[in-house]
Length: 98
Image 1: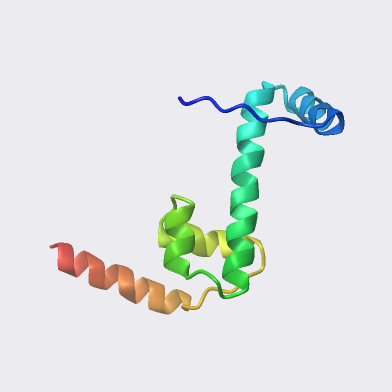
Image 2 (image 1 turned 90 degrees about the vertical axis):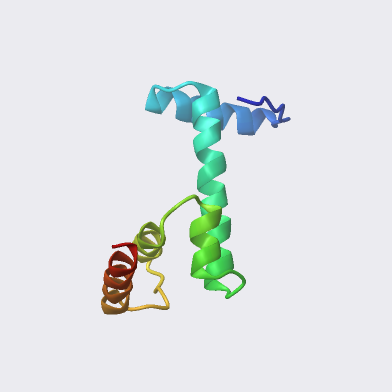
């Protein structure tokens, strides 16, 4: 795994240590989780603002389209496709694979 150094303020480091202690995890694990959560947040904002498509959102976050739709739903954001359309797409994909 590549290594990267990051400078943190005393307050940022204190928050990271506190969170790591509360979750009984190493600081590096918590830092990686926070980094991914921040990426999700930025991508969700970009999607909400119409700057990225559902496909780009899912690809950027390493998720399937259905996982991305579930993520949007968990934050109260609507997907541009209905659940019925999604199910039809899945069925079409299954037929194409056969």
